Amino acid sequence: MNRKVHIVIGVFVSILIAYWIDGTFYQDPWVTLPFILPWETNYFSFSTMVYAIIGGIIGSILPDVIEPPDHYTHRGFFHSVSMMRFLLGALIVSFLIAFYETWVWSVFYVIVGYVMHLLADGTTPMGLPD
Image 1 (cartoon, rainbow, N blue to C red):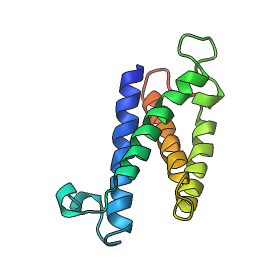
Image 2: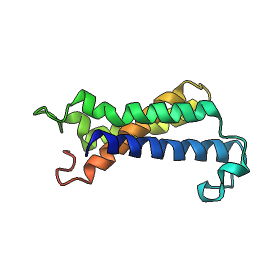
Image 3: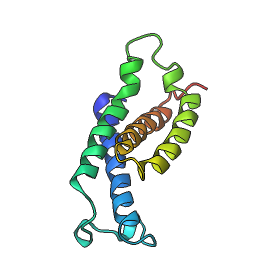
């Protein structure tokens, strides 16, 4: 996949998660994503959207910055299932810490973008190495 597709996927999913977190946890914990509409809530803050967009962009291109697509090590450790497992654990930890430390939201959305990059690469014929 090319860089633009990775960025679109990473930013889109980051914004959806940010919207769900802001709308659900700060409005009504029993309301889930499909039932929250942008015009029904005042809780989706500008700073959350900035964290989600910038984090989604950085995270979605980071694997290809570390292992460039035109290099022979492109699908190495940083494009592997092992890295995906590590990042999913880091995603859970950063999610829990972010409620106490606001700056951790930026790390959370970078991890979301990175995970989305790996999921998108996993759907290609080359897949992800173990």
